[in-house]
Length: 104
Image (tube, helix red, strand yellow):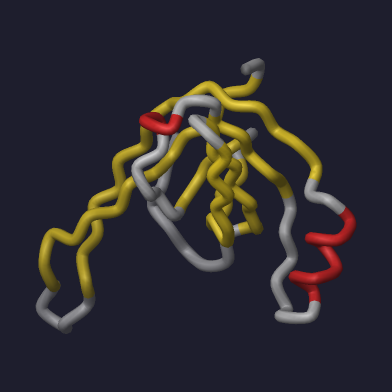
């Protein structure tokens, strides 16, 4: 694995005075391999107005704990699909839209 990414775990800490959920974000560094999204996957997702950007491959199953946010190369991504194959997992990512506090 020649790339580094940060899986970001979000946990609720309760609600503020207005009823908004307060989230704590904890980034965790992992080693991974970045791959291009296949043409078929790109066009299939486009029918649902989703734009997959990258596939992130993690070779050790235990390195992924269901996180939905990933920071890679200074950009924040949402996980839109997971694909398990033996001990490896591939996460399909799309650029995150919105404000977040995930710093790294």
